[in-house]
Length: 322
Image 1 (cartoon, one colour):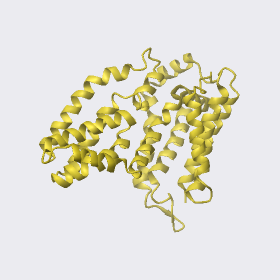
Image 2 (cartoon, rainbow, N blue to C red):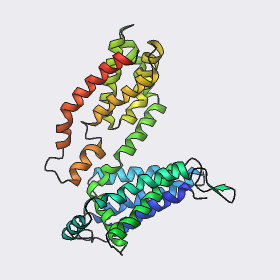
Image 3 (tube, rainbow, N blue to C red):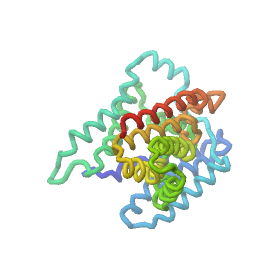
Image 4 (cartoon, rainbow, N blue to C red):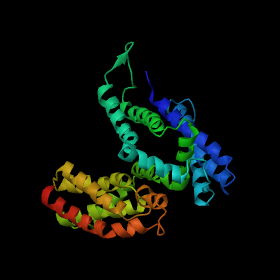
């Protein structure tokens, strides 16, 4: 049986190899901080396997996260000069292959679909081929490996170090912001467990006029919008605002359609994603990868759209959810 933890070990090993490269790259003035940051992530992927099985304490993972936050917060990470293909070689390869360059990228979802649907019920020796409940994540991992092999064959690249160096270059370009969505999603779960949603619900109930459906709709949608701006992730804002207003008020009190209320509420949160630097994977990372002069350029361009869409979501909820 292929286990999900094997995939996590492979991811962790990849981070550790890249971290070792970063440590030895003298072109990066912050090579030690950069290597430590990504090395801790790689070690976390491996170590967490024993945390899940209760064979190791979780506290070291928490310490590692705090150390990573210090390294990123105090600017201890930077970019080096990976030894990979030249820009001329990449341009020549792109001209030669054209749209075939999309084949490796499309391979990943194709293999993931095969694993999640086709191999889900395949057994070998009385045991499932893929660990039950992890077929999709295993398909993603296998798809990435297959895509790597296909890409190397298409580009006639025989050195594994080249894609590793290229991956490391992307990690350094995106920096700590790449991990912000996962951190913020975890923060949303912490807020929910600690009762933040309950307290917000009490405040909202005390402030909202009784039997004012449209005010409650505005509060829920705008609340999702604002909490997403603060937390950077609609998935982090969702449990807080839904526990506060969405479920008890709109669904429980006003008998709203749960599917419509919660789906449109999530869309309202996504409007906040468009205009917050906390949503680094959508707004800051693309600016860094494209080397834009204004790192807030995507946010400025998306601001009018976010406002219009938020208003549309409020109207749609009022029309179709009740």
